[in-house]
Amino acid sequence: DTFCISSTGSGKSLTYILCPFIQDYKLKGAETMSCNLNTIAVIIQPLKSLMKDQCKKLIDLNLKASYVGEDHDFSGLPSYNYIIASPETATSKQFLTALEAIKGRVSCIFIDESHCIQTL
Image 1 (cartoon, rainbow, N blue to C red):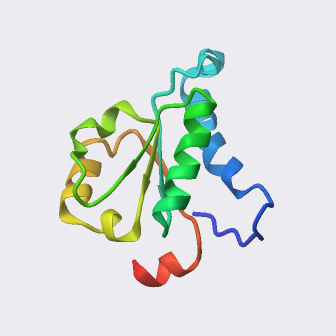
Image 2: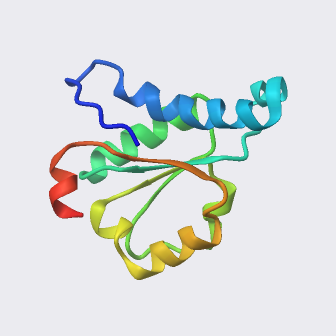
């Protein structure tokens, strides 16, 4: 487990962007560089606008990303490498059940913004 405190604009997003690449590289070696990742990073963020912005940035990098809400159909989660959820969604029974089904592929869970920890 790792705990990182870092200011806005310091590159925290890079840690969760790289995590699936590093985990896949450890498992598969150099073939990971094709962006055909197997592992999944779950990112918990407090604001829908922040979730949308981060998801768009990941998609612009040609990475498979989705942000999910409480009313989301979670059956599509296995097709993404970056799953962005609010604290409320991340603690919902439906989301936790969906994560259980893909737990072997989840390499990391990031909580972005410290006040999310209080919510969880």
